[in-house]
Image (cartoon, helix red, strand yellow):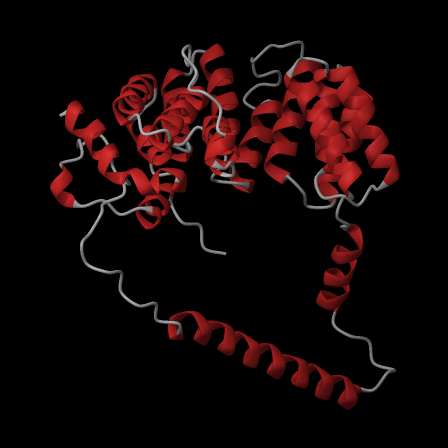
Length: 336
């Protein structure tokens, strides 16, 4: 699977005309640019050809597999890799809709500090379907926060055995090991690396894109006075950080989607006290829809003052604002 950087995602969503003069702070400007020229026709060959090749490859693989099975006969065992793939498939089973809802409620409890409530709900879901991907890790996470050490250890061992959330599970094991050593970051046995440090390094290796084990290891190194190594880990965390605040992006996108689905007659009044990013973007969208672009622009300027430039540019490129690209240009012009 190819991971596309967020800058490229923004560029693909809404390329901006270079004449707009977007500030250099925005590494990948995404505001919509209106053009008098009609869009070029879509070349469906570029879409259909990869799927056609994939289908041919799949068909060839199936025929080759059938021929191999007929050649070796039923008495000859298939390779161990096939057994491992089948076993992995048996270990996973998607959650039902009620189970997903229960997990969402448990995670909301966990974010609110209600770790015991979250743990109870997650363990109930785990008992109903222990093959839900990452359910063992989530139980371990809630158990660590609820100070249920034995439950946490068992859940994390199970998560690692299944190869699920490996980096995060190792980081949680490091937290348990740190609790066991009494919170001290000192090396207990000569020059041997402490268990929490070793587990955190394993977590970094298991998922090089995860910044959080780097943070935790940097904190332990600083506590021991190893500032050079701590700085190295923090620099490593910096390059792993996602530039877009996921919570803000989701909140804004959901608010805009809810408003976008409404007919003009169903739209609410523009709020007079919008302050949070989701409220500001929602109110700005209402302003555009209600024919009050000056007020909408003022709200977007307020949002741009609250948010990092790249995050504001990403959110301003939401599809809901596509019909109002000309008005969005005015926001950027006022910032130059």
